[in-house]
Image (cartoon, rainbow, N blue to C red; front, side, top):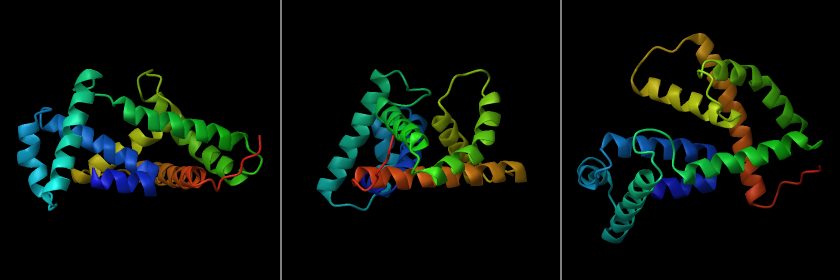
Length: 182
């Protein structure tokens, strides 16, 4: 919760990847609060009041995952809303004549997105979610110590650069510092 709040303020893309990791952490602990207390919360070094807030946060996430039917896979609406907000901003940026650098970054990334979407088995996944899925998958492979091909590294580097630019634009937009012409 503490990390999530900080990441949400600083970098929306890192926040989303972190939240996906939290969803997987909850799944790994069988959506069981006792397991989360034992395996996750014991690692926090926080005052009692903060620990109660963190525990409540996990309980609320578990409830969302159950009620939204994403106990085994998928993402809670809270996280889907981030993709929706980023997609809205992405489309506004592409339409703006002031954002030629953003447009160029997108079109440089687009071949990787197309390639990844063709491998998704026909599933219609939004472009930005495809980008996040690729980066998240890469992070999981790294955590597992698996080999990553140079082609994959090249694609992830470009996608990550594009998402970093989008995150910066999102922060500017949230702070009222983004002026787009349509």
